[in-house]
Image (cartoon, rainbow, N blue to C red):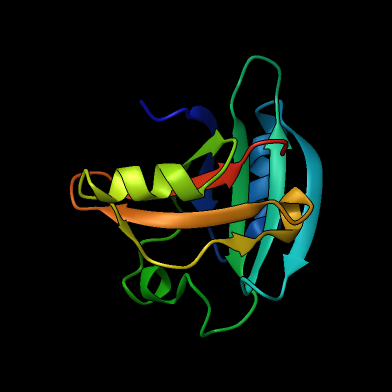
Length: 135
């Protein structure tokens, strides 16, 4: 059995400051904000008592990973769920056996102090992110 713990919902937007301000009105506070040049995104992690984290994700460049969402006018929108796990390697392979397709190699994420992340796609669920625990 895969050891996964729900971590956050990723919300894509081209107006990150406005999105953050709206979540602050809902009782969230900013935990951390960074520009991750490797992943080509600007991200902010938000927290509120008794709620999952919210990750606000916006593009750093026009060619970034949100490009297709922007072109299809699908933002702003929640677009991925994230699960923490002690290592992304084993769960990634096990999820592959259940129809999840990795769309990238495990990559260190600046928002999570270099902990590796990987995105997988499932035709019935969309995008799922795995985050190495400790974040």
